[in-house]
Amino acid sequence: MPYRKHPEVPEGNRGDRLKLHADAPTSLNTVTAYGSGFIEVNKSRHEGHLLLMPDGPVQRWQAAAFESLSPADFDALLELRPEIVLLGTGRRQRFPHPRLAGALARAGVGFEVMDTAAACRTYNILMSEGRRVLGAFFQEE
Image (cartoon, rainbow, N blue to C red; front, side, top):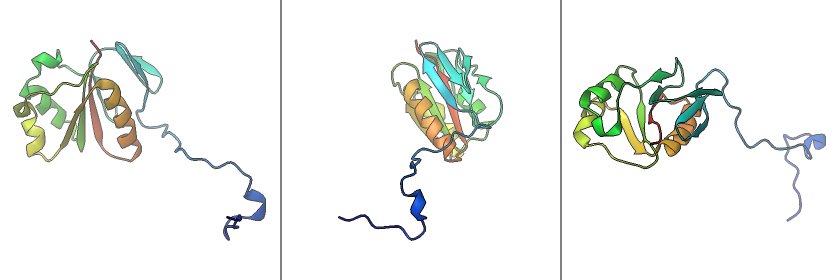
């Protein structure tokens, strides 16, 4: 197929590089790295269980461990007024009992469960789309 000139692209710009990725928003909290025992947000390393939203400070999550999650832990998430909660459960995906997240469902808040690495990646995607996402991350065990 022969090359067809796009009418809105000036002749001299056909050889310019095409940018396919979005610029990272610098004013929003972005997961820049993660690994065994840490999550890096905006190039600042954090250890322990974290709560992360696109705006505001990185917070330590008071939930002691996945096995000891309680309805009160999920009620505390609602205070941050998220649109969707991503629960990162550590190295492997584990599902909390459905009654624990009942308050989220009653409030119409989306809820997804995945391992923490996947939750970090998904958080970045949703955050970059302008969603009010809350990452509730357990560190890898």
